[in-house]
Length: 356
Image (cartoon, rainbow, N blue to C red; front, side, top):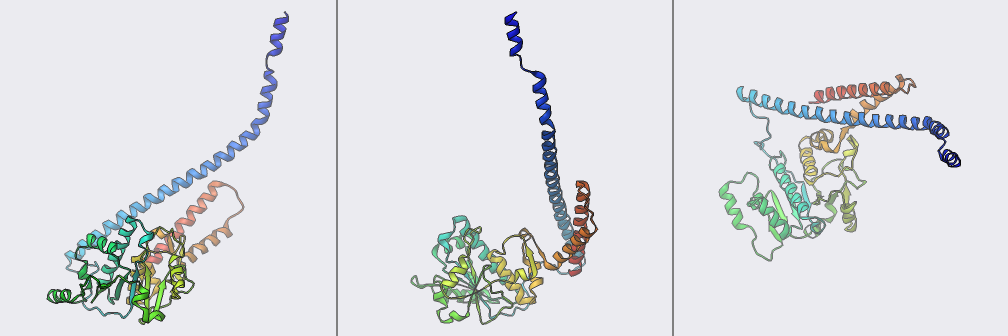
């Protein structure tokens, strides 16, 4: 009997324990509810992102199909191609644009290759420009020469003046400086290559040098043909902050930034690739309209939109905020958000079609 009583006394008080568990359940249920709402919102956000990507993919396919159809119709009707071709008449600009390649030690092999590819793109853009500029590469070392010659074995011909015939080209090549001790690698026409730093090449024109950097507080309003504009030949994936600006300040050289933020709202930094900066400047010489230039050249990956479009979206936000009541219903908020996004896209697409 004593053993039985002792055994019974050792049994846990199931009722009391159950009661204590039940007492903590209301709090845990509210936590679970809050957690489930948070997870639901995250899930909706993920689904929305996936739908947006699918929508963008369909848009790209449709745009590709439309372009092919437009090209086919133009061929059938005997109309000229819309593909950019070399203008019948090119008017040489006095603007000089220097690509400063003095950052070889700060780049990996892959980044050096990217730099050369972007420089080659600059050459291609300049070749087809209505107002081609003097394109100059400084600090053009043997490493850059090796990479560029591997990518473009006949890159020396880039020095050919615009409109020069093949016979004249051969004559020009024979006249180029080929001495091993010469610091001037290639020159004479569309492109010039210098082994020297730009500060040595243009030692007598220091007052005309303008280093373009997104970190400068001086905003470029137009292109002065008496100036020599320098673009940093650096692919660094944003590792080095203020590097080009610091380089210019060390040499007491003027700095300037493109007027991107004057016309565009951008989520990321306004740092662009070498070729995009060059393309913006080249197209500006043709149409002299920064807003139009930026719309054509800025890459979509920068997640930008024109300030005029942003004003439309902000106006829609204010309109909806005034009409909304203080209801906390998640579904209602989602419907308002979807409606706002749809109307924003509709207005922006109409605006862009009108501009085109």
